[in-house]
Length: 279
Image 1 (cartoon, rainbow, N blue to C red):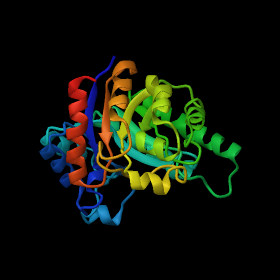
Image 2: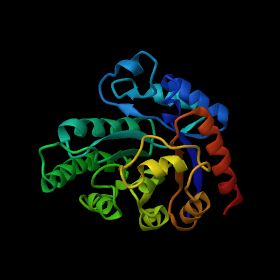
Image 3: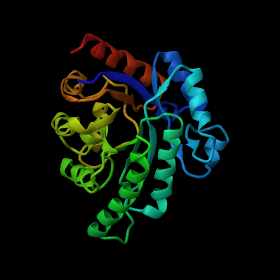
């Protein structure tokens, strides 16, 4: 079975109004060895001004690689969320993210079906999602990059819905980026869902949910941008880690998704102890 590595998503800087490089350096100081940047298509005012952590795909990809290399961080994946059901919005964005990942040696690009267009039917949406995924898979296959599909929106909010998206395109490039917090907030048994997809995992978003967050939103939303510190919420990390350690056929990075540096540091301490204990 594969090994588990603990990484950090760039979302840790969400509340700090700091740029990408600051998030990288903060992760390294905490002791993380893996990092997941977020990329965007085109230009974005706040990130260009240094107040937000995303990196433009119009930048030289080596901006990402050089920063992570200097901090001795291995890049686990690129976060590239967008509406797969809207090829005009997410098609070229996703394909450019895959080419960027390949250029700098990143193994996974993570995405989801996103929020649908208001005027399309469900049947039309799945044709459009298949089109986007097929185009992206052709780019990814020849570059040995995996596309991690995440439970995060209206169709992937159930195990059956995520499977339906996964099976639209038969490709070795397509796998699952399981988000523990999103799966929980959708109202499902996280452990049962993880067991269902563990053989297809290519990446995992380690997101815990605080009890008050659970009471307010569970069953009412399809996901959330960030969670609380891992170990401070309602999820059973011993069981999640054991499932992946025992049943996943490949190495997996647990990329922590939380909103503050303090939560990130506490998450690493909690998850690291469980993984290190081998339980």
